Every structure is written in structure tokens, then in C-alpha cells.
Image (cartoon, rainbow over all chains, first blue to last red):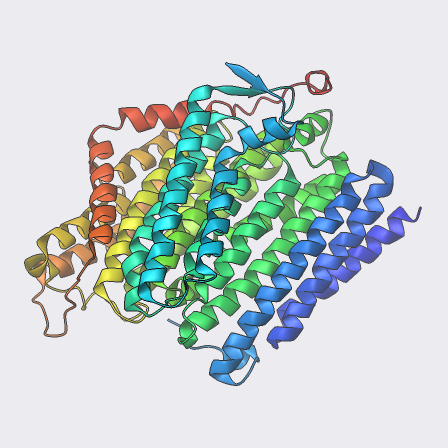
Length: 98
Length: 500
């Protein structure tokens, strides 16, 4: 059911996520956009699982676990950089250049 | 020869023995350091325990390799073949060397949280799963286990803003790349109805590749391009390599890159051998861009750490040329080149860690001036590494480049080979000044002492020794690499053979 629209919606959400990562400059917003990309892929998996069987749905659980692990580490890293620069704006985070 | 049934718990544990042992070791380290995590001695204890875990894992690997196991039917999740064993061996070498080089480094830089070693072991486990996966789900999980651990390791020096910035950049780019990879997996699953690499190969072999599958393959290549730092997905590498603690930079340049390249080789050779016309131009473009840009930009670098980062981009290009061939000869060349690159890079970063302070960001060509007179052996080792990275005859780096060239020539396609040779010549422009600076310039007052611990010296003696020994006498490693890669013939079994 609704395979085509679900895949299209997933592609649109993924593109919004990519655009957000490329255009926004705030580390937390960037991270939210990456989460949006991951969840767009989850939608694809669930939609495709109707055609191809359970494998796709199981994959979604793995992706959710991985996203949670990434969130834990990612927010900790953002916190660590905030302690140094008092900012999470990527424009202010540029000591590494050369 | 013995067959094992991967569907049973016993069979799967046996097939995964090196990974299981290493995970167990990581958990033991975590348990021990939960009440011993304050002093330098505790940190050292964690290091020794981790080394023991790597040793046990190596024993398990040796058992698997000699037992000559065969999976019953299709290997659904993890490969049981020599290509995986060779990859795991390379990853274990990189892990052991990283731990040995870290023993002194973490005390000197006051990174006295023993979780460091636990994270190295977990990252190595992820690399092993990634390199051995025969299912895209396992590839993805291995990649993430590796990446999440390495994100933390890059930012491990909490007092350094450089380390924190490197971790943030690596995390954002790495997660971005993972999402691309995952979308690629989803589309390939949509096109073929399976995530098993061999089955993908069999189903795509029946006709033209569907649009969805081609798109998925493209996204997969983007994801791996980021992970192995191939141009144009390389922009994170110099900053991250620069800011990370030096042994971790070495670990990233060797382990992460090796696992990524090996996984890519297996996916392209087994899963997409029928679509070779589709991916060959893309891989060739990535390879040429990486070789040209990596080598040219490295010329303008003063800091050794950044110079090595650009050189690692160039080396990703050389490895991609070997994958481009799509032949088992190319897969063997990939393995051999990775071994040469891993040994050389580990030794180089080990020496670099001894030459500087506070992240080694300030070690430049001027810093090492006159090293040849004060520390002749250290200078000799660094010279050997530079020559091996350059591909100078008499070192393993030369044998690696030579086998890649042979694989390319075998495809009757000279253009890529010519670019490889020309860009290697360009790379002499930044490798040789290092040697010249050590031997031909006078030392300044601020020159580093270059003190090394016994463990560090052992790593450098062994790696540089192997580079030179195998450089003059390449027979054994050449044989192992070619034989190990033979399982990736690119020939896909028919669908009937897969459906039991």
C-alpha cells in the first residue's frame, strides 16, 4: 500500500535533511537534520518491507539503536566544544586550518 | 576442511571467534577499570589487558585461518574466507601497534582515562565486522560501532580545543556519510529484495540493473568515499587528523581506511560484479581526483601531521585504482597495499608522537632539522617510512604500488597506471624534503629530544623491519595477499546455486 508515495516522501525528507546539513551553521540544527535523514531512510525501509518481507522492518530497529548511540556521543561532543568556545555555531569553530 | 553451519549458535560463534574474543576483552577492560580508573598505573593496566585481548583474538584468527572452515551453504551475515582473515589480521596489527604507541602517549599528554583502550578495542571490533560482512546490515552496524568509538577517541583530549573541534567535525561529517550509506542500502534492498551481498550479485546478474539499484550504489559509494577520505569527500580529513591525539590519527589513517576499503572491495566485487561498467568510471574518477589533489595539496603543507593527512588522501586514491580493476589480482593488490600502508603509517605516526608535544600540531620540517645527527636510528626509521610511502624500491611500499600497476596493466588500460606513476613522482616533492631536512640542515636549539618508550621503540623496530624485509623479499606476503584475494574472483554463482 502506498509504496510510491511513501518512497517519494522519504526522498523528500532525506533531501530536506541534506539541504539542512549543507545550509545551516548551528551544530545542533545540523545534527537534527542528520537525524531527519536517518528517519527518512527508516520510512523507506518500512515501506519496502511490504514488498520484500520482514528484513526491512528489522533494519529499522538497528537504525534506531544506532541513531540513539550517535545522539549520545554527538551531544556529548557538542557539549565539549561548547565548553571551549561558548558557542555551537560552526562559524566560530575554526581553529583548525592550514 | 570442515563445514560449519552458521545458522546455529555454535557455528556462528566459531566463525566470529576473533570478534567475540575482542568484544569480550573490551568488556573485561571496562569491568576492571570501573574501579581502577584514576592513576597512570590503572591506565597502563588497561593497556596491557587490551593488548592481551588483541593477542587472544589473533590466536583465534590463526586457528580459524589454519582450520580451513567452509560455511554450509551461503554465508549469510559474515564471510568465512581468507579475504576476511587477511583483513582481520591487518586490523589487529594496527590495533596492537596503536595500543603500544599509546602507552607512553596518554601518560605524557595526561589523557589518563583508561576508557581510551576500551574504545580502541570496540572500534577494532567494528572494523572487523565491517571488513568481514557479507550482508549490508552487518556492514552498516560494523561501520557504526567503529565510527562511534572513533568519534569519542578523536575528542579524547578534553582540555584541547583542537581535539574537540576535530571530534565535532568528524562526528557531523561521519554521521552525514552514514545516512547516505544507509539510504543506499535501503534503495538496493528495494531494487533487489535482499541485503545479502552475494544474493544482490545473483539477482542483479539476471538483467539490467534497475534505476533504484543504480541510485543505491551511487549513494553507497558516496558513503564509503567519505569514510576512506577520497576526493571530493575528503575535506574533513586534514582538520580531523590534525586535531586528534597522534596515536588515534594513526589508528584512523590505518584501521578505519583499511576496513572501509576492504568492505568496499567486497561489496563491489561480490554484489555488483555485473554492474562493473556502472561503477568503474565512478571509482576511476574518485581515484584520479584523490591522487592528483591529495598529492598536489600535500606539497604546500608545512606541518607534518597535515602533510600526512593529505598523503593519506592520495593513498586512498591508489587503493581505489586497485579496486577499479575489478579483478582478483586487484583485490590482492589492495590487500598488499593496505598492509604496506598500515605498517608505514603506524611507524610514521609513532615517530611523530615522539617528536612533539601537545598534539604534535607544531612539528614541521624545521622542527626535525638535524635529527639525523642527534638521533640517527630515529631518522633512519622515518626515512625508511617516507621512502616506503613514496614507493621507493627496496621497501614494501614499492611492492604494493608495483602489484597495483600489474593489476591495472592486466586490464589493458594504461591511463590510470600512468596517472598513478606521475602522481607518485609528485609525492617525492614532499616526502624527500623530510629526509633532506633531517640529514642536511643544522639542528636548532628547540629541536625535540624524541624520547621514546620501550614499547614505542619495539613497534617502530618491528614495523620498519617488516617494511624493509618484505621490500627485499616480498614472496611470502605477495603469496598470502594473492591467495587470500582469490575468493573474490568477481564470478557470481548462479541463482540456483544460492537457493538451497
